[in-house]
Amino acid sequence: MGTSQSSNGSPSGVPMVPPWVPDIPLPAAPAGNPENTPNDGEEQNRPQGTEPRQPIPIAPARRFGNTRRSMGEYAHSGDRSDMRRGVGRYIKGGYGGSSTATRRFGGTVQTANALYSALSGGTSNPYATPGNQLDPVLLSGRSADDVMDAVVEAVRPVDGSQDTEASRAAIKDALSDVLTKFPDADLLSLDEQHREFAIESFVASDVFRRFDLDLGKTIRDKAPSAVSGLARLKEVREYIRETVASTFRRLREAGGKLGTGRITQIVQNALRETFQVFEGYAE
Image (cartoon, rainbow, N blue to C red; front, side):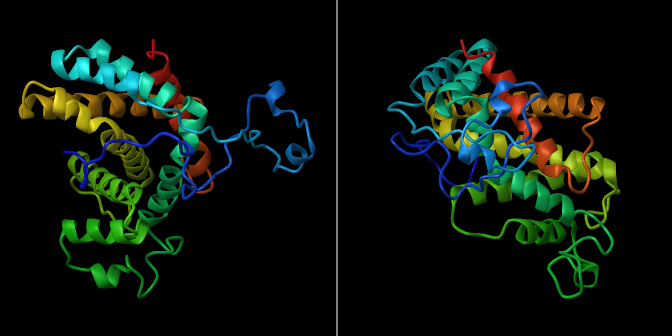
């Protein structure tokens, strides 16, 4: 468990959303929301059906101070209320709230789009055309691990950044989860149910791996032993997974089904609603 690199967390004095994160327009605010009304020339020029863009806040000093305190207490005692409070403070204080946190995960949204396409069969899959990374002819007879590695390389090529390393690991997590739950699934041509599960699993894993980069060291250092530290991290991971799954389930029940052209909106909504749930435990 954990990421390929240790980290002391995101620093202060820098934008909470780094410049390399894709700035994907947020979904529309609810109808009648005064914040959705253009109030200057810049806002009048923004695309219809998107939220007004607020300036990205600069991370304050000790941005994760309260979060580390809660997570240190959780690591020592295993009290889930400390864990929930810590995750809430992570979003509210560490990333300036659910809206900014959703923008921070713009790379997750972009990668989810690419992953959805890569797991689709037929001519609509840009990665599976002859000679490309997921060409079925080239991957014929290869092991499941080989196919998973090919999907990772196609969707999130190496660029040396921590975000990319975390996302690559999250893609592999998601594909492994698919094969665990659906042993007969064909990763190069998943049906809609399998793809939805893969995207949901990827989002949960990517959020956890970002958390691990920022706060995992605190939990490992403050836990009574290495074994208990890993157990605490596993519990955080399951909490994030359960919350993400619950959010996707609510969106599906409300008609927010994944599909080509809808990935950005659904994944952003899932992230934002998940982060709002976390924020509710911040105090």
